Image (cartoon, rainbow, N blue to C red; front, side):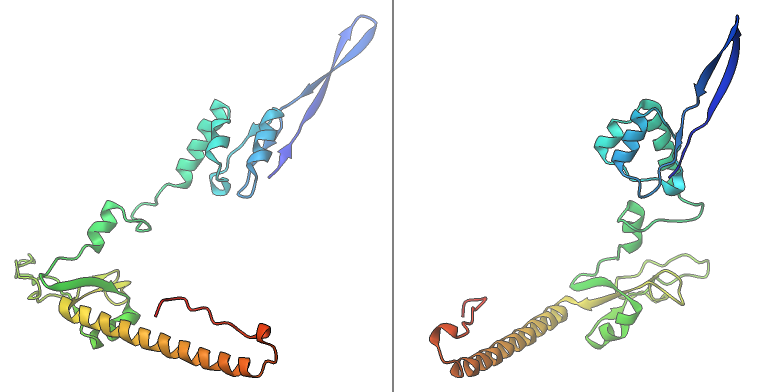
Length: 225
């Protein structure tokens, strides 16, 4: 951020003596990304001109924005609009906009669970029973045929470039998924119980070597048996 101040003097002939008139031009304040709201409001109170740069536009609180003079606020909004301008041909998928929802939506298949997997998750998903969802088959005119879910014969449905996709569409029989989830849950529970019992054994050994009862370690259980 920078402040520029220019001062000029003019001489006026008034009879026998000369009177110097001091003319001060307004300073220009250039806020940057890390400029505080307090510094901006202080500069405005001192009568500075505010020059917003959309490439370095600070994010103001709602309270600060409401305290900006009208012209300064309008200029800020214009810089904000320029900053947020989407380049031609670029589509934002950062939030679930209507467009993003359409892209991520998968057709339903009764009794099956549909989801997206990253390429690095795809092989593991196939091992536990997932299968790839395919696009509908195209006829000789390039039109999609109306096929039942699970009977599509087109390419695997992907999001992003076909050779380097971001996501791959898959589905699994709901009953098989539920059984897998239960198995994973039981395995996690067994590991947790085993770790807890091992910890208790270690604590008992430590306590047995302590001379005073008050020094003994107490195990606080995080769940009811």
